[in-house]
Length: 106
Image (spheres, rainbow, N blue to C red):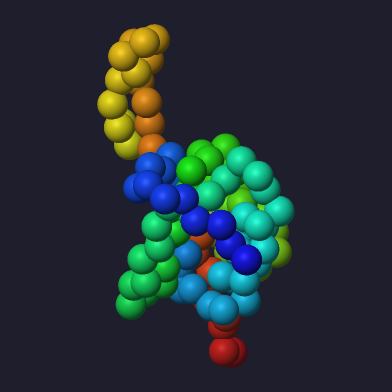
């Protein structure tokens, strides 16, 4: 049972390309084990799926776990979201792209 957040707040976007049932089940299972991460939103696309997560740190850990388990490539990028009013530090949102390796049919 994957827990969803009520609001649209997120720190990271996990992009799964292509998205198979096995990969999606693995991601949901890993999120279920954690208390500090929720799913804010999910988008189904022709090329895969985007999952918006409330924990940037866990999303990066999940990207590394996907790379080891499913033999794919992980690309991490960040975009400036805003500036924290209290600390004046820049706040970034992270995008983790997991691209499954294509199997050669030679």
